[in-house]
Image (tube, rainbow, N blue to C red; front, side, top):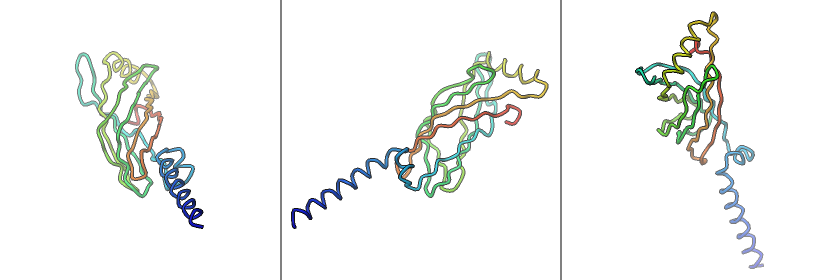
Length: 163
């Protein structure tokens, strides 16, 4: 009887250890239903902050809607933006910001664009009769949370006139 009790305790501890290690994988955590709902990321604005003969610096406004019962803190974001078939910008953002529980976190992402591509974009935007020029943004984001690391990929397309 004592051996069976020790075996049961060992199996229970092993099961908890396995469950704890699996809870750090986002896909498994979602499948098991650990109370995680993916955040929604939106491109909401693009503002020019600095212009020179060799580069253009933009602030790209993003909103992160967090439907969870806990805060999400950005750890890292790798992004890529393009328009008119031209790569406008790419890079990594490593500063932290927090999307509060059941709230919206906002971040201004500083982005450098080559002037040549920016001029093509402005020319196309000015010449387009209906201003249908689109900005495409893709990003892979890593959030830190009480339930572990959360990875989120997002892709959005917005018309330049709407930003």
